[in-house]
Length: 239
Image (cartoon, rainbow, N blue to C red; front, side, top):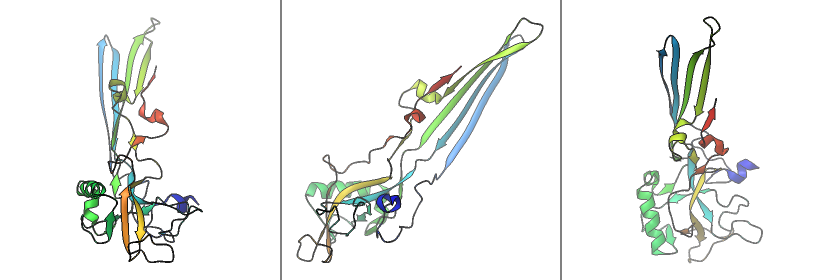
């Protein structure tokens, strides 16, 4: 099922307690308006409507370094969900529970932990959804002008709406970027080692984790991409 395949967990037989993928921790909504008759008693109206909203949460996970011929994880015994194991956060560079494929990986991971929310969870498995994607601010503009019809005192109103007005001013503003579904960021590849330092199997105990970078460029900030539909991040003008 999707829940088994995509959800972050520390034990695949049980759901991991924690923050919901859909939680919006906070948001602010605001509006401002101005109305004035510049020409006779024909009103000109300008309205701004906006909101700033927190980003969606995401989990830090680790990916099985190598699966067997059936796609099953030799370390954890699961299949289909081998990149969703909630990450164990080392106590420091010399944590006896973790070894590394290189000193570079060790230093990069330690630096990342020190500069992220993971620093609060050293020596334990990080709970699910402890970090959040970027917040987003969106403003919509409404402009309306009354004009005469020259039929008695009647008048009509012409209007224009600009949705996501900030994106009209600057293509980098008003965009919605989030960690993509299923909202898991796998910082490292993991391999379980037995007491002799050899790769463990489903029938031998996992004594030590061996971490390696899960990216050719090393351990870096998670990629946040435009949410779908991408029109959420574009401006739209209606007249």
